[in-house]
Image (cartoon, rainbow over the protein chains, first blue to last red):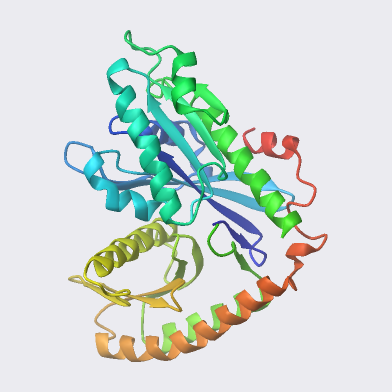
Length: 198
Length: 164
């Protein structure tokens, strides 16, 4: 649910990075934080355990410049990936404008990926959204590891809707901004559609 | 999708800002701000210069969401007031009209009783303004439908430019 402020001429949108535990959601945000001009980002907040596992969420506010005189801000959130944090995941999906699914490309994590997509679908439905209708992109992360599943195979099990998808190595930044750019584009286009249609 | 996007117009923004300032003065608070339940900061007033209001807004919403989750588990609709007490500063958080969150930060110059009293009064006023705003959006009276909409002629190029 975006926030359009005609008074301060700002648009705020919420993007959530979803995916199984240790797939690299927080790493995506860290890289974006590291590579963004200090003027255009706020503080990155991580509510994590002592071992740096996300406990509740990571939050990174990002100002991307102006569209037609409106300052565009994206609030990036990650969810905790571990299965037992499901209650927290549901909360973070509230009011989401776009979802990035970060998949772990390692063979042994394929089952976790599939489970997490199913979990995303269920939790979105509970909030009144439909995964087939929200702005959605997929990132196949950790492509640098030796035991990865071929992209074609990942695509067939995780991306039946053929949404934009990207190969990535979040730890060195490969594909991170391509993913962000794609979801930002879809979110803004969705806003445009909403304004025209409704 | 649930509900509609939150839209803010100049007229309501001024009303909200005036009410927050009144609350700030009357409750002797340091900072007063208003957050959308999704974590978007709507308005802030008081000693905000050295305060990261964006992060505070997001964490406040997270806090309310987590507490709301607890409420549900107990069969409560929501816990409408939260209070955090610190050594120097305290935070009073309340939900208004099930949609927005009012946050008051105060120190020893004020008291919990005074803040609660003033928040209650302001909540009615703010609730009224938001109802008015929602009606306006639903009826499509605002500039959102008009030529002034920032999205009307948005192009791929505009979006590409955002990333430099």
